[in-house]
Each structure stands twice: as structure tokens, then as C-alpha cells.
Length: 305
Length: 258
Image (cartoon, rainbow over all chains, first blue to last red; front, side, top):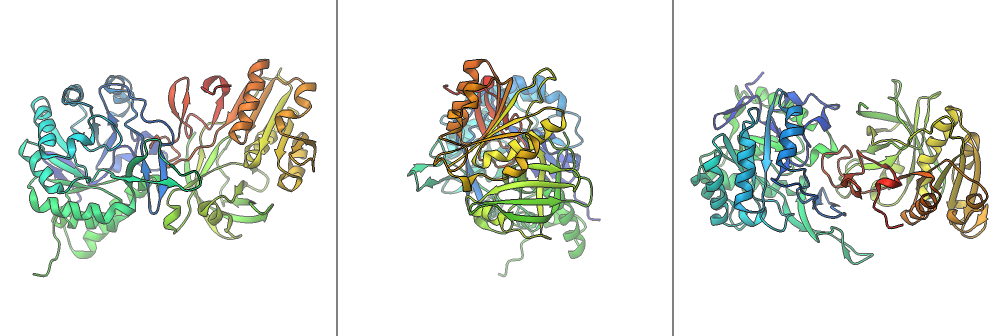
């Protein structure tokens, strides 16, 4: 039995396997299928200061080995989360991390401030990379100055663990990671979805109501892995890797590329118990190759010089 | 209701039509309770183009044989792959998902179940359930032609059956909304599933006469359990997940322009 504990800054996770925002609801959706308390953490659905209805239907298109979504941060707002959802999830025996999104610097700050008052939420994941909202979202995450500006403002009001979720829709993700590290982020998570598109040739119409949307699933894994590796070489803060992880081997790849922890996203839809299988698989992998702790694997890539 | 992920064994795959098959599945253990209107998410294996599960209505639960029936319409690669399963194969399912049709009050005696196309699937389960609960359901099924009407013998076991076909080869000629029972009879409740224009016409008919009406909606889904928020329908409560708040909706909750 290997030691699966890892640390994201001062936050200790019982294992490196967490579930990605927008793919795992608030955890309870999966409770019939698995013991969600076994997870290292749960990133809950993107939360904004205001109630958002999200984008019109259709919001989803299946693509080879993946899917596009254009949900557009549908959520009932921070106050609803605090009053109605937080009391239901606060006593889970895993870290509940809130994905915070906004449409302006002020709205990110206001939302982060509200969530910081919740005792059992040890961290937030700042979403500067949602491709499905017109204002804010990815607009901040695609330039070093924009990313730095949001993180600087939120860091002033949020003293717990601040994770920044990065967009892959950039020329050099490592530069963005360095910018948010400089502003005091405790960790970066990457990647959010890749901007994509699908067309129905019968009708000649785009499938998504928003024309473009976010691509996720196993099809993005090689891109995500490459970006984790590039970011690992550029920053000192821990990296949470995600993008198409669907089994323990994928998880090991991300960790070897430099991730301290990982998130399972879209594959939860295919196998709602996949994250438990990944936890078990990581443990067996460590045992098989003689690693006493999973943390020994981070960045432990064998490169021939 | 507790949800399960189960590997069920195919006991029969009956070809009903060029585009439809009936898949019967069983388990060593007693199948969990499931209700009419609910659906399952079927895993499609090993093909990049069929990454997501496919949501399929429950067609019938045969408690005597411990079998779950799925009426599969072969639309694309995913449903085709599901339809290719042979007896002895195992199929991975999430079930039971979604809400179910509302059982009528005992004083409500006359129930009309209207189905079109693959939308006839949940009408069979609902009809059987009504019959088991002591009611005498009336079915009205519509199709293009006689060959497109399926499972008629099974429907007849549970209630009175009427049909319409567009070419007049079975039952009355035309669409279900034109059938004479809608003008010659009154009903306490209507349950329907089928193409959206058909359901909208029925919703308009029901709303105009003050008849309680529930429709079962179709939607493209990813998770099927309320996590991804992809399969929304506009309702009086805003964007609502069809997979968890539906697939069955009372027409009063919808924002259809009827």
C-alpha cells in the first residue's frame, strides 16, 4: 500500500484523484455509484455571483472520443450555493473546492470573498478559462496581463488555497502559469476545454447554439499532457492536471509529466466509478514499481539525455 | 431512487423492423424497481465515434422473467452498435434514470396513451403499469405505414388499441391528432411520447380541454444524472435538466407556444 497523500500548498489530499468542475455536479449526483468520500477532492460546478441560466439548447455535441459543451456556467449564484448547497455538502469527508467564475474583476472578487467565509471550503479554483461565456471567463485567461490582474485582485481578498484554472486556448500556457504564480496563486489546474466546433451537414447548421464550444474527453489528452509538461518546467507551484483522463494509466502519465494531483472530468459520464478505479490503479502502480509514495512520481519522467 | 450501474445479459434480440429491434436484458439478481417514463444510459463500447452513453426509454419490465426491454431505433453508429448485441452479450447500463409518469387518482378512469415512432416504447410500460394498477388504458399509436407499427400484440394485452397511419394501411388515415377517439371520447389524463410536433399538437388539444397531460421529452445527453447540465429544456423554472427533472413533464411546466 503506497502513500497516496499529496499536497497542494498547505492543503493535504488523501490521494491525488479529484473530479473536475462541471462534470461531477455537487458530488451527490454520483453517491449512488461510488463512495465519494474516497476522492482526494471534488471541484463543484462553476459558481458565479449572479444566477445564470446558461446558454440556449443545444449545448452538447458528441465528437470522436470526446464532446463539445456550451453550458455557459448555468448555476444559481453564490448566495444560493451558500444557503442551499453548502449545508448539504460541507460534511463530506473529502475536500470540496468551489470553482469561481465571473464576468468582471469585481464579480470574481465578490464571489471569492463570499466563498472564503465558508469554513469547510478550503480552496477555490479560479476559472479564467471558460470558453462559453461572452464576457469574462476565458477573456481573462488568454493573456498574461489579464490573468495576472484577476489573480492579483482575488488574492487580496482570498487567503486560503487559490488554484487558477488555465485555458489551453493560448500560444504559451507556461507564460500564463508563470504570471499567475507571480501574483500568488498556490496552484494551477490545467487544462480547461479546447475551443472547438461541430456542424450538422444535413442542415448546414452548427450543432451548438453558441456555434463554438469547449472540447473535452480522451481526444484532448495528448494536448493537455504536453501543456502540463511545459508548465511543470516553468513554475514551482503544484500543478493539477486534467484533460481527457479516463483510466489510471492516463493519471500516471499526467503525474509523470509534472502534475501533483489530477482531475477526472468528462469520463465520469461514461463510467461514474472511474475515479475510484484510478485511485486503486495508482496504488497498484506504485506498489508494482516500488514507489513508496505517489508524490515521488511527480515530474519523474525518464528522459534520455 | 437509488441508481445502479449494472452489466445486464442479453437474452433476446428481436428484429421488429428494418430500423428497430427489441433487446431483452436480464440479471442474476432481481432487477431494481423501475417506473414507466424512466430511462437507462447504455454504454456503447470501443468506438471513437460513439463516446457517450445512449439514453434509451424503458419499454417494459417483465417481472416474471426478470427482463428489461429496450426498443432500439437504429439512428446512428451508437444505436446500431447497441442493436448488434446478441444473446449472451453483456451490456453496461446506468439505471433507473429520470422521473416517471404520474399514476392517476383512483377516480380518474379514462387514460389515453399516445405514442409515435420510437416514442411508443415508454407507452407500453406505462400501459402495463396502469393495467396492473387496475385501470383500463386506451392506446393510440401513430406511424407512417402498417409496417412501422410495432408490438401491437403486446399493447393489446394491456388495453384498447387504436392506430393511425399516414398511408391508411392500418387504422384511421392521418396523424394521431386527427383520430376520431379524440373527438368522440373524453379522457381524464393523456400521456404521450413521440416526435415533438405530435406532442405539441396533443398538448394543445389537452390544454384546450383542460385535460391533464404529461409528455416525455427526448434530448441529447452526456451524463444522464444531472451533472453536466447539457440536456436542458426551457420550463417555467428556467433551464431544467431533462435527465433528472424529466424526461416526463406536465405540459403546464413547459414554455411551448401552443
